[in-house]
Image 1 (cartoon, one colour):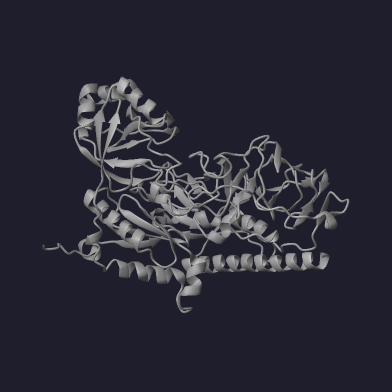
Image 2 (cartoon, chains in turn red, orange):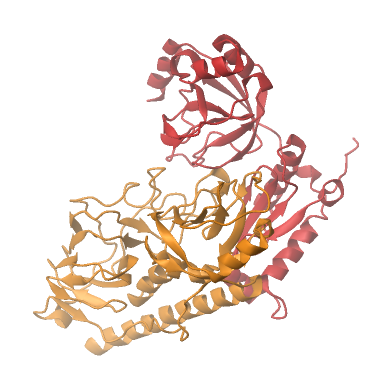
Length: 246
Length: 328
């Protein structure tokens, strides 16, 4: 079998910058693109399995990976001639010369039931704005797989993309109270609110699945790099799910 | 320890919940990590024991058993059974004493620790309360009336206390260890610092900024505006405790302990970690000034502070040992 060897540093330009005195970011460019996010997830997976010395944690975003590091711990560890941030920058540069193609992680496909009609409080608004029927919005939303680019905003809140242009719509100007499980659209992104929260995404449905469960070892149903497919369920099915859950 | 009257926002905190930001679970933790680690040090605890972070008006506590406590950070005129007690100093309190905070004097939040250690369960490797996720700390929420926080340990202080309601132990943290008073908060330029116009950069570093009424554990809005050369958003990426974001329209927000993990506004600067405790004690209406520093100096400041905290912790452990040995 022939392995397609590629080095991070060869195939993508990157930039290292610092987030204050205890974190550093490797940035692959200010864009949302699946190919770049795949690099991000590969690097994040590598760092999770092979943490740098003194690393506190690694965090993937759309097009960047950030590591937090322990300045006090590293100070004792490294040569006195070198500042901790210099050492970190060096290590990150060395890391980028590695072949991380291996760490293209296997992607989970997660299928998520959504009751659209009953809970899609903004379906009508989108329908009017985009001159499209609510049924067509649901059909388009369930017609493809989405990539989970990252989690953020709330515990387990997934930023997924990209929705078809016909249903892409800007977020609301004023945040509103949103119920846990609500599925929304903001621009070309789609996402699920794991908790009750104020939010500005246009709501098209609700899933009965618990996206965040504090009592589980893995409290979030989705993780960055997953693929997600939505399918439509009726209100009865939604209620059945909920009663099974409890 | 029983809460007989609830405060406005009193929560269990530690140094923060790290390792879960990739799931969107923020670190949280004590806003003033210096005061929080000091208060543990003063009573002989390790730096990451859970402490109670109190805002004014603060809870009223009833000690249902004897305890050694300390309070650090903001000055809310703490009293035991109505008598003033000092901050930054260990105090032994008798059973059935009442700890009450009478009047706001200075600062935004204070910290309470007990040598008997609070019996709190960890969630995702941390004691900190995450109110949004209703998890961690004490039932995932702020303390309420009639909550009882158990201690992990029980100590006998009868011989020391005799008939007193409390005894103040004869050592105190020297909070003036950093002898030059700090009148400007050190910031490191952020990745989008150069998005600011030259005029705005110099305004940011010369003028004072007033903390807006929108200032809480999530972030501090600042009054006043800056100008960017062009109004672009960035693709959302990681932000941190101390990140200063430039909002659309030119406003600024400093992200604090309960910040989101990811943000999409330009990051013009980041507060040096060693100066976050200063900022954590500021309140709406307070005026702050910034000065520019670099990675190297920010790192040195942080290391000095950690060194001080380590010395405090070791010194207090020794003093406590001596104190109890002398007594027996």
